[in-house]
Length: 493
Image (tube, rainbow, N blue to C red; front, side, top):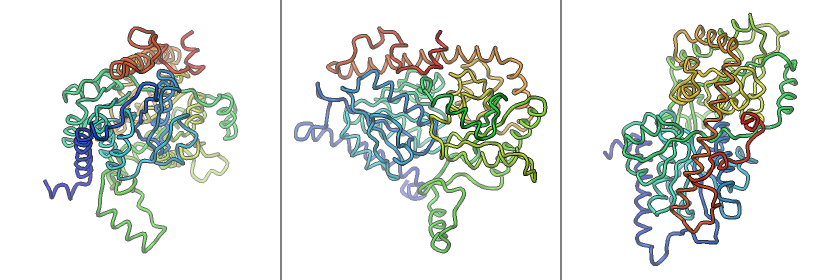
């Protein structure tokens, strides 16, 4: 075991996190009389820490947290709740998350969480990919550790609107051990079943991005016109990613090599470096798969444009997507034709979440490998096609009743299948919009019911907390939502 810890930084991080959870448990027992762990006191604000993946310019992660905070403020009241949130880079999350205090999360986080959670009355984990190894075990370790630290001190430990997927054996053991005493509301039934298989009680809910209100449509239209849109041609929004370079994994050898290389050449960069000691998967096979994925999308779009007038745009929902957007832009634009303008590109590193979602809702079609590009465009009744790398988009399209428009990133016939889907969506726009409308309304109700269960849990844990008596399982689900955007209100009429 000792040698495996030295060779696997992910496993070392998990053991370190587990050690701090056990230390918190011991601290709580020893200090119950001498120096009690901070607990909620009637008349004082309830302090909740939201633990997630903010501060990386990931539009989906930020949108869902923005709406979570708005819902909690609505349910708890600003006078009675003190919300704070973890951010990886406060510069990237500036002007987001009104009223919530932002704490900068260090790269090595177990001790920081041990100290920070101790001064809260509870934790709400808010990352969508909450329990899975698909992207980074370190992220899920942070989620589990935050919940485990809160539970160790008998505090609120809530997972809200997250998803569970495939986990490696070590992460699965960590989840099973330290989330058993948490209150988990998942994003879908599939996630609930996965956690249930680990002996963890969970209830099904939904994502929290449904109520998001973007920037005014006029702002997006003006920006699009500045980039060549004529104001009339249907917009085809393309949201590519690099699906093949996940998960990121720690590599101490490459970290040392990279550090040495920078000494010799400060300008030298490793294109597969993610952050800290973590690197994206890389290699000839991965690059070839990515090239086929990009070329397949470009080929389908070119063929579709030859018969259907559309104005393609590229939307990078996360700063990391700029490389994929650049590659798709190169594949779409004729080489050597200086008279043809480049396909416009809007990426999260230069446009905030309010602008990007507003742009998506001006579109007539969305083709996306980003789950939240689809979710946030749906209240605008924008037909969308998913090209998925995991279960998230599949679950969404199954719920929408359109599983045929969920394609796979590694489909050898992706170009043909995407072209067929685009043609079908064009022919069935009205039926598609009605299915989208019904799905949005279902998910708004689910989000409201999540709010009801959240209130019930607060009331059961802290009966002295001054909750609105109309809130809870006896109330109206829609009354548990934050203020709705104009698009959502329109769907309800």
